Structures are given as C-alpha cells and as structure tokens.
Image 1 (cartoon, chains in turn brown, red):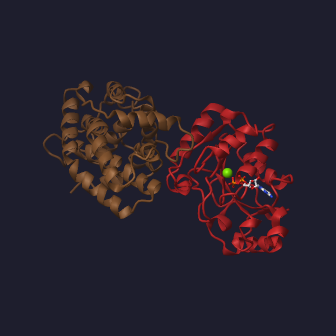
Image 2: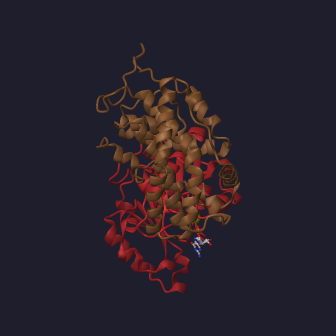
Image 3: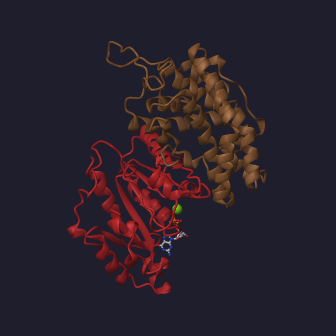
Length: 247
Length: 219
Ligand SMILES: Nc1nc2c(ncn2[C@@H]2O[C@H](COP(=O)(O)OP(=O)(O)O)[C@@H](O)[C@H]2O)c(=O)[nH]1
Ligand SMILES: [Mg+2]
C-alpha cells in the first residue's frame, strides 16, 4: 500500500498550475501533427522515454537524497539534516542537481516552464507538507526537484517520484488533447492507462538512475535524452500569439 | 446609481480583511462581453494618478484584453500582464489559481502597487474567484445578457462583493427592464451593493469610490 498522502500528488486537482500546461502538445496540435488518440499515444512514445525519463530520474534522485529508509521502506519519511547555528536546517546541496536538469533541458523555453511549475509546486508543498525539506531550493527550482522533495515528504520512494513524474506528463498531454481537439475523454483515459503500462520500464529505469546518482552524490549520472521536434515546437509555442496553454 | 450605498459597510464583507501595507487584489468576473475590460480600463484611467495600479488579464484565446489595455495606454505596458489558462478560465481563478498568483506576486514584487485588478477570462455565471487569489470581487453582467439573470442568482450575482449591471444604455434597445434587474439583484444579495452603469458611455463614480474604499482599509 503506497503512503496515503501520495494519492494527493497523483491527483490532477492538486492546485499546482498543471492544468494550464499541455506537455507540449498544443504546438503539435496547432500544426496538424496530432489529430487523434493514436497520435497522442505516439507523441507520448516519443516524449516519455526521453524528456520524461530525465525528469523522472531527477525527481527520483531528489527523493532519494532525502530518503534514508534503507532496506525498510516503512521506516522514515525524510532524513533529518543537521541544523545550523541559526536554527535553519541544512539540506542537500541542490545546486548541482539544478544545473544538471538545466543542462539536460536544451531549450530555454522549457527550462523556464520547468521553473514556473517548480515555483508553483513549491507553494503547494509548503502548504501541504510544511515539514518538507525545501530549504535551499530557492524560489524557482526545477519542478522535478520539488516533486522529489514532495514525494519524500508524503512518505513515498524514489520509484514513486519517478512514477508521478511520468503520470503528470502523460496526464497533462491527455487532458490538453481532450480540450484542444474535442477528443473523446474516455478514449484518452485509455491512452493514459496504456501509456502508464507501456512506459513502466521508463519509471524503473529513471528510479534506478536517480537513486544511483543520489547515492554517488553525482548529478552528472542523471540520464540525458530528448526529442528535437518537441523542443523546437516549445520554442515556437513560447513565441506564438494566441496559445491557450502556457506550454 | 449605487443601490444601498448608505447601508454598505465599506470596511468589507464576510471575508478576511486585506492586510495593511499589502496591495488590495480585486477580481473582476462575469460572462464574456459584459464589459470587464471596459471596466478595468475605466478604473485605471480614473485611479492611476492617485494609486499605483497593476492589472492581470486571463484571456481565453489571445492576449487580446492585455493588448487592448496597453493600446489604450491606461497604464504603463509592463504593469499589465496576461496569463494563459489552458482553456479553463474558471479553474484559473478558483480551483487552481497558481498562474494568477504567480502573476500577481511578480507585479507586487516589481511595482509594489496599492491595487491589483485581476480580470477573469469570462465564463458562465458560476465562475467566481477564490479568496485565496483576491481580496474582493466584482461580478459584471449586462442588460443585453437578459434581464432575468439577476433573478436566477448564482454565486457571482448573489455572492460578489459588488455586482455591476453594465450597458444600461442598451436597456431600452434590448427590452431589458433595469429597475427589475436592480430589484431582483437586491433580493438575492443580502445588502451587498449593486451598481447600474454604462461603463463605455458614462463616468462610474460609485464604482471608483467602492474601489477606493477597499484600498483605504489597507492603507
Ligand atoms: N453599449 C455599451 N457597450 C459597452 C459597454 N461596456 C462595454 N461595452 C462594449 O461591449 C464589448 C465587450 O466589452 P469588453 O469590456 O471587452 O467585455 P469583456 O469580455 O467582459 O471584457 C465591447 O465592444 C465594449 O466596447 C457599455 O456600457 N455600453
Ligand atoms: Mg475582457
């Protein structure tokens, strides 16, 4: 049984601003590249194992950096970090992880989107999990890091963090497709479900990579992968007039 | 004419008072085309010399509203920010106000304004603001939308801190009985004020005074 509070992180109604993002699909829809549920599935097959993998691995790493339960999955929610003289707690040094995500997000527009969503999720995390180790994350961290921290605070594992990252990407794309194309929401629920199963191995791979990187304290070990077309479309989207979604 | 102004407690309604020293955030909601942008423009023109004002718009399809306000030069262009709401204007002002909060906080940090106006994207009559985003809300309807709207009530008409019935000038042309609209509104609004105006064609001192009063409670 997953930690009960994890359900909250999986719920698209959790107010973190996600509803205003399309996971890049609006730009593809506008160009006629995506028209039907199968196209949405194909889009996800390109994006989840690449950009999705990077995000999921980074979220898993952030969770693992806070997670010291070792062999006993039920042991501890988040590691205690020694407190400084001034009463604040020290946390992981997030800077290399932040830089590693930036380096793996080639397009400035998407780095900005990641920080926008990170800022928003940070606000939600502060409200829902006031004990979360957000010290040192700054005001506009990459979303993957905040998701990892939130997952740890909610009692989840690095695998949960990776799974949530993939679930959010798939969910954003599917719900935007319903709104943009008037597609059957039931058909898209099917696309969502099948994508989660099909890309289960991506979650496993991301969790392993993130946990290994965190264990070695080496952000450079995070995977690197992307798909050029969605990156280009993201730039065009950011410049476009009249877009409905923020990304 | 502002109805029941004499009975109006200008220090605020049932909701938490805005904090002293903090910008007052006023949401402006109502159906598409009722005159929200016209109202924002009119308020900015009158208030910009006495207050530091900033505006967030929630355009549904374009940055049309923000562009209109910038073109009309009601404020410096950088004090007007457009937010994208992903086809869901009511979500962005009520259920998940993230994008709007970001925009308001950025404006506050940059300009330290006295007043931030947040114009909703325009939606149906149930779309109201969360008080997690704003301190006060104005709900705008117009005579052309049908004079039975106040009678039907709903969260915007009944609950808004100020109800504006706009386009009174069009009343005779569309066969709307504005007296009846005012009376129906009074019945569902439990003493909260209603203003009948023609934002585009006449001054709106009663709305301006109401806004001033909201800002004054935080001064
Ligand atoms: N006749 C009349 N037209 C108005 C009035 N207020 C606004 N309008 C017009 O109604 C249209 C929609 O106004 P707008 O402010 O864009 O509505 P919004 O969608 O609620 O922002 C515009 O053409 C305005 O010029 C008014 O008091 N009388
Ligand atoms: Mg408007």
